[in-house]
Length: 402
Image (tube, rainbow, N blue to C red; front, side):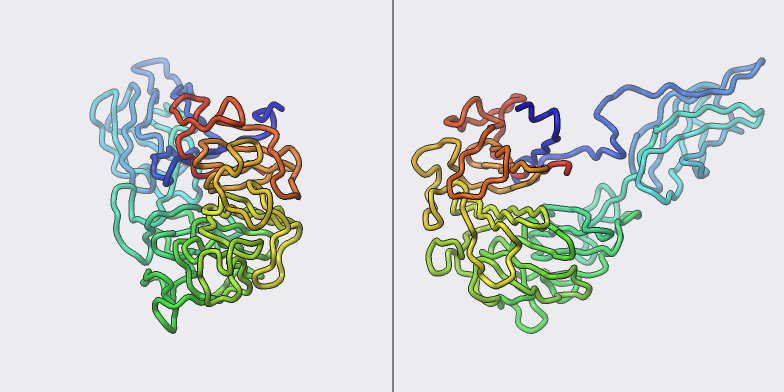
């Protein structure tokens, strides 16, 4: 199977700690410079714009424009809006301040002269916003700040962030378009100003339908929100996207009730969990990476009751086993899986401690079903790490584009 021909697999490094360069509107990592479009004149120096630095940032970013023919009358626009505070450094360089812009996107930069000359550099500057900080260089604040965010994703028209170390899920009613936008509400905390473990409006430190403890991943499917509440050894389900702070979850998986948090409560079974981290649903089925039990639990239909028993487990021969690489590493074993995703009818599981991604060509439905393809290893019995294009080192997340 040629995996790359139909899917993009994105792997996140351990701890989500390695720097990632944002990509805007399908931009690539290519360093090639777009060809400028100029309006020449029959006399004097032609006004041209050949480079913009930096190529991305927020409102009020200082831009350095390079070209020819700059003079005291030269002005610039970014995305059709006037670049403020223009300063002519020389005939080949000027600076200005990026103006306000309504969308997060790449846009054109244009320089203009009083004699009618102009030069355009298409897609020269990418507008981006920072959530959790007032700018790209500071770390401060709790109301708008985040600590160890592990997932950010759209849920319909809303935008959610798993703010893991602050023990909360932040919800924006629409995708933010400005830096340091405040969330509209928070789950797991009584307000945007608190972040204690299992902090609830009624009793700090008490596990409840309103509390969270290191939530790592979430998925929205239809009207439901499903959150992996890792350190409480459970998964919470809201039947509709919450609309108020600290709104109570409707269902819990992995625990007999909404006030318990014991690892493998009652023993390893299809009803228990230990450090669930990743989860995914296609709207019908649900898959959860039960990390400490070295398995992925699967439900053929979305659960509708507390502690509903999983239908099967991948990585183990049955629902009562939890041995890492049970029987020896192979196509049907797992060791601390942390992420799962579905593309069409295929299942992708990030097998973190085995430094690999396993792929099932058809969605599995039985205990210990064997994977069809492995990425990151030469075969199903290897687990070495590395830094080449064919190796991983404790990868943490896998996502697909559909």
